[in-house]
Length: 202
Image (cartoon, rainbow, N blue to C red; front, top):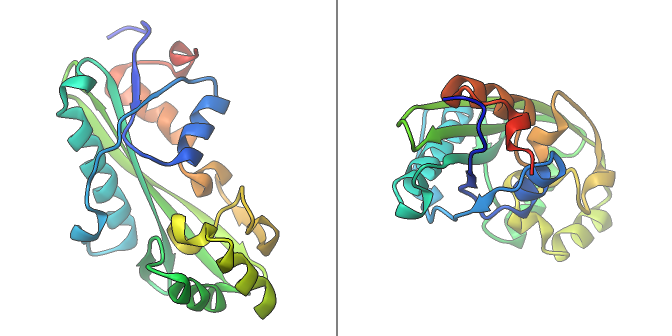
């Protein structure tokens, strides 16, 4: 497969992932996988992130609408004390999560799976970025949870949203925390489809 123009399909409803791809010059089609994330489990947070990404990519790759396309599935979890945390179930859980995270570091793990539906080739990998949380006050945490944002994102925080002032820094790829690792995607495109990411620029 040469560096001809290919269609990239994002198997995710995440506006943050779509935004990252667009900012990098790509114009993916979005097809939401419909995978029940709560139905899957794994031995470690890294394995869970990869398994979820694979499930999303494989579900969309099987659809007629994705025929001939490159399908990218991603999913993120926050690893804290060896446990994987996705989206909090409710506001109370988000409050508890933030009180546990503040002043500490966690690892945001994002699974990536790329499937070339034209050839059936696929590869999956997980990127990891350490996140150093600040020490927001009780009132700041309550206000953040009341905004509703933490209920929509893995780990109950975002690097590009209202919780950004509560993140002291990251060690690793910041894009991975937002939703996907563009350097990892670049490598997967070469491995799976022998395609340069520049060939996908819109």
